[in-house]
Amino acid sequence: MLGTAKALFKKVKRRSWMKFALRGVGGNDNFERLDLAYTLEDPWNMDSPTEQARFEATNRLIEREFDHVDTLLELGCGEGHQTACLARVATRTFGLDVSAKAIERARMRLPQAQFAAADVFHQPWAGEVERFDLVTAFEVLYYLGDVEATLARMSQLGRACMVTIFAPAARRVGPHLERIPGLRKDWIWHGGTVWLVAWWRND
Ligand SMILES: C[S@@+](CC[C@H](N)C(=O)[O-])C[C@H]1O[C@@H](n2cnc3c(N)ncnc32)[C@H](O)[C@@H]1O
Image (tube, rainbow, N blue to C red; front, side, top):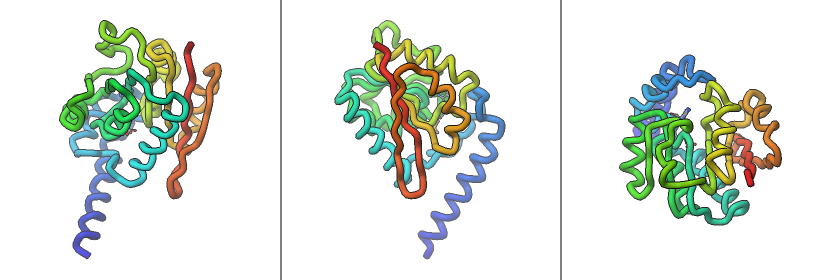
């Protein structure tokens, strides 16, 4: 009973916080407020069974389509919850996020990966990795000011790219994806939640 009440309080607190922190953030490159969101630990509840199911399903798709990759760059890695899962399908894992608070926690979660607080236009590994085998953006495209430019940059950086979007947002973000030559798509389902997964090869 006490456990249920505590969980409910935590959920209400997180939701109220995110409603405030993410005001005006969609489609705006609002890096300051994205960093503010991470004042609360795990603001997107990535530890939840639903998100963990998404991580596992995404890994299965990566394995099916690309087997095991050598280098993987994750755009919008947050605190590294999904990075920890992606590290199982990649030899070397790199994570970027515009939130310095999130990157600090990601480094603690996954010391063997490399992380940087930057966007995809300022990734610091150009001298180290010529081209990544796979560049991903999972649950990130909603926050970008220029989705097309980011998708084009991902394609420059990676031999292949993969993104996921929460199905209700597909109407807004989907048209940008449809313009990519050779785009392939699938769906991830968990309970009542659905995500679109899209991927493409660049060579
Ligand atoms: C919903 S979280 C997704 C975290 C993780 N990819 C996942 O699916 O578990 C979105 C993350 O994208 C980051 N983000 C938003 N815009 C970004 C950008 N232009 N470059 C890098 N990261 C960005 C946010 O700071 C946030 O950590």
